[in-house]
Length: 574
Image (tube, rainbow, N blue to C red):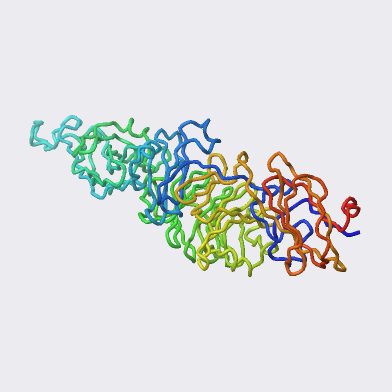
């Protein structure tokens, strides 16, 4: 009895010899959807919308949260740099609905949902601190004094006697100002101005620093005044005094200490603007935005993405390619050893590095999945997991030689969807783009990506998208027509040459009227080719015997099993 039964179909294992593959594995798999055990194609991409010719990255925004699950609804924010990062602002109760975008092409920028919809230009992030120092004048002329005494002992109290002591306590105060923009974001403080006098004196600030009117940043609308007071702990702090409209050159402070001591304490002492030429960002769950430039890491204050204290800056030994957040950890992919960041505030970030070099060759290959963060490295696909650190996940699937030659790690753009790492790779030597997927311990190829420019996943629906030419598509939807898949089996070897005389297939005729089958013998010689239109047994030519047998299937429907055998009796036994 000799027969070959194909079922429980899986994808390819390029690392293995074509004759050593498991019986259900593929020597070639194009457009296969894994998971069901049947041989099932992926589905045709769905057109979402046209794009500008230069668009290489998109990010979807919806007006109504009810539309979040529908990838065809909403506004697609378009960017020309494929290495763009976009995050929704973490500010609590953000009435402006701020978004932040960053790329090597334009640095870190801020905009709002309304400005995105209107096509208004984004702004630089942060509020520059005042550089000038206000002038403080203390005029005690009208301050209350104790009754005058006969200090010269001439029996008369007159102008020749010293004035009485001030009735109010004498104190030394320091004043400073900050800037407040239209979003309520506050700058770091100006240099301080100090003076001493009775508390009921006329404390006048003049030469109050004014904003420089930089049009590249959000408009400054207020100047906030602070002064020192003594906190309950005994320490000296700066408390809020008042907000002044921009343009106000002087201010007379008459607010009592009893009021000021209970106002808001200055919280932006260390606040700075981020570097203008930041190259990428990521947002951590505790509201800290992480950015990078070269080998430097920058951190915002929690839930305050406009405040980037310079004192928080850390460095890694190698240039940074990109960032990805999983759990409470930010993974730092570099040109050599990867690192991991953890911490509850920007000031307490701790950095740990891997002992082994696993350089990231392409920012667009960095992908976050439930199990970890993936990126393309020298010898395969690397993954960092919270429990296991960093490892290669393609050693037993692809192997390092085929990875380097067939997958071109420096030219991969990928995302994670439907349980797999899926993407495109540009092959410079061939001048073409091919698609691939790595999932369930095997590899799949995808066709019809010759003009693909970028892939990603919609952050609202979790559905993958692909940019092809100047059109945005939903990639691999669940409800369009099937694509045509091609699946080629291993090379089965029989003890002696035989003739495979019959073939039978079980497939769903609701989606397609037939499947196309090829059967090859030794040296790839074609022994049979034809369309199977039903589940009936089909006889094949019986003139040639082979010791090697390989089956190729093309179909646009779901195939459950296929059997080839020498005789009808052999087929029925499988």
